[in-house]
Structures are given as structure tokens and as C-alpha cells.
Image (cartoon, rainbow, N blue to C red; front, side, top):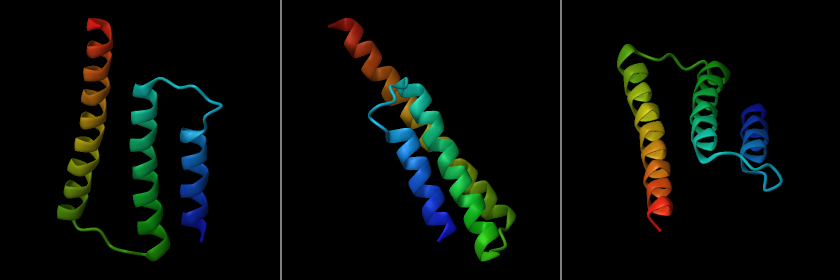
Length: 82
């Protein structure tokens, strides 16, 4: 239940239409949200994480961040070209 509340609050904070944030800030905030959810889940459910799962989670999170940043850069360069 706590994780659901944390996820809801973080989604509202990042996705609120009344708050205008830079797309890069949104991408970084979304990535931080993912990290917090993973860490909270590991703590709440007392799930042990092996070195492999930590490395895998880190690669997946880093990949998500890099993809978001690349997409934002592509949109910005496309907007400048027009």
C-alpha cells in the first residue's frame, strides 16, 4: 500500500499539468522515480538482490534515462530545424 501511495504521489508530482518542467528534468525525475520504486520494493518485500540483478537493474535504468534524453534531444533538434 505504501508503494502504491509513493508511486501515485511521484506520478502526480512529475505529471501535473500545472507544473511546466523541462523535458530533460522530466526524464531525470522519471528515472529517479523508478530507482525509488525499486529500492522501496526491495525493502518492503525484503527481497534479496544478487549482484547480477543489481547490475541488470542499473543497466535497464541507465538505458531508460539515455533513451529519454536522446528522444528529447531529437525532438529539440527537429523543432530547431523547423
